[in-house]
Length: 529
Image (cartoon, rainbow, N blue to C red):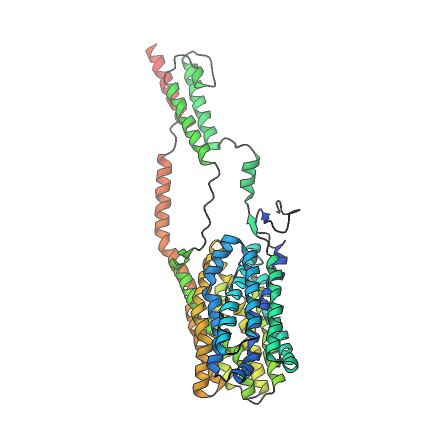
C-alpha cells in the first residue's frame, strides 16, 4: 500500500497508493490532540479569568465577553485565509506560524492595562493564530483516514476536553499563588508547543496504482484497436483467397488491391487517436480557495446549521463558573463543574466517533439527533438551583456537546454534504460562515445577563440558536436527495444519447460484416466467370 513512504526525510510528503487509514496519520492524530488542547481547550477554560478581569478592569459582563467573542470571530472569519495559505505554503508552515501568533497574543495580554488591549492581543492576534493552527490540522488529519476518519477525529479532538478538565482546576490554583496575570503568561508560554505539533504534519500525496503502472510499463495497444486491425486483416485475407492471391496479413502486401489500401489507413488513424487519448492527462491546477461549494444547496443548509449552532458552543463554558458562583457555589466546586463537563465531553466525542464509524449508517441523521438533545441540555440549565443540579446539567450538556463538536467539521467530507474532494475549501467557507455567530454569541448572552441580572438567561440564547441549527441540519439530506433527483432525468437522457452515439460510432469493419462483404464479392466474381 505504501509507495516511497520509507526512508524519506520528515520534510518530504508521504506518498501512498490509497488513503492509508493509519501510517503517519497516527502521528498527525497525536499532534491534533495537543493542538485541540492548546486552542479550543484554552478558549473554553478562559471562564476562570472572567471574574478577575471584571474586577481588575471594572467592566461589565458583556464587555468582558467581547474578548472571547472577538477571538472566536477572528478565528472563524479568517478560515478562508487559512485554507489559501495551507494550499499555497503547506499545512506544516501555517500551523507553526499560528502557534507563534497564539503564544505572542496570550503573553502580551498578560501585560494589558485595559480591556481594549485584550481585544487586540487575545481577540485579534491569538484569534488569527487559533485559526492558522486548528483548521489545517483537522484538514490534513481527514486526508490520512477514510474508513476510520470519524472515530480517529473524534478521539483526537478529546484533547480539548482533557485540557478543560486539567486547565480549569490548575489555573484556578495557580491564580491563588501568583495571580491572574502570571497565570495568563504561563498559558501563553505553554501554547508555544503548537509549533512542535505543526512540525509533525507531513503532507500526504495519493497516487493511483494504475498511473504508476502506466509510467513503469510501455503502453499497450488498446484492445479496441487490436480487434479493428484483426478484422481488417481477416477481410483482406478472405478477399485475397477469392481472387486467387496468396494469403497475406497486411493489406499493403496485396498486389493490385485498390480497395484494401484506403481501408488500411482508417484503423491506423483511429488507433493513433485512441493511443493519444490514453496518455496521462495533465493535472489541473489546485485552486487556492474553491467557492463552488456555495452553489450546493445541501452545503448551504449545513453552513446555516453551523452558524446557529455556534451560538451554543462557547457561551455555556464561558458562563458556567459565573452561574455557579451566583448560586453560592464555592470557587473549587465551580471549577469541578467545568471539569466534569469536559470529561463528559470526552465520552461524547468517543461515543459519536464509534457510532459514526459503523457501516452502513446515515451519519447526518445521527448528528441531527445529537443536536436536538443538545438543545434540551441547554434549556435545562436555567432550572438548576444547586450544586448537584448544575453538575447533572453540565455532564449531560458536555456529553451531547462532544457528540456534535467533534464531528460537525469532519462530516463535511461525507457525500451527504460536499465529499472529501472539496473538504479543504468547504471547511474554510464553513468556518468563515460560523464567524458571525462566534462574534455575536458571547456578547448576546452577556447583554441578557446584564438586563436580567441572572446568569441563567445566558443559556436561553444558546438554546434558541441550537434549535434553529437543528432545523437547518434536518434539511441537508433532503436538499442533497432533491438535487440528485433533478439531475436524474438529464443523466438518463445523456446515457440514452450516449448509447445512440456509441451505436453510430461503431466501426463498419467488424468480422461478421467483413465476411458478408467477402462472400458477396466472391459470388460476383463467380458469376462474372
